[in-house]
Image (cartoon, rainbow, N blue to C red; front, side, top):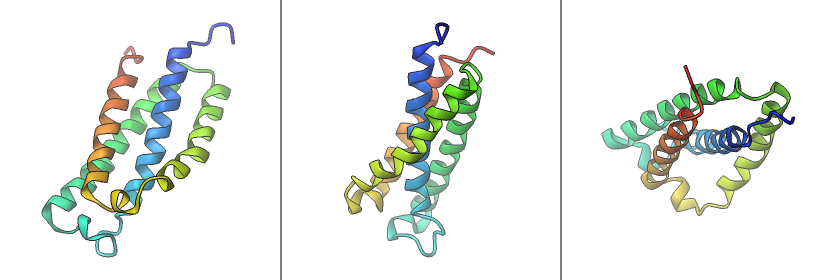
Length: 123
């Protein structure tokens, strides 16, 4: 643990929280036919699928950043994210969770988290 890079750990934990939070947010819009009205139409569809793609990119960045951590630390950090992120979604107002604003927040948070994690990854 003496060699643990705390910047990578903090970035990984924050990225994992954003990934799980975003997955929960996007799953509320799928399937699109049964989702909220904000998911319907061309713009809604673009936002839903772009958000899902952003979550996938963030998950790929998490996998690469996770290789810099001991696996036990990565498992514990990911577990904290899986257990804590759904509660963060429930704190948001319903209008935000089912609106295009929520999808834009998912896109923005995934982009920021992916960019932050990319600074730790050296190919």
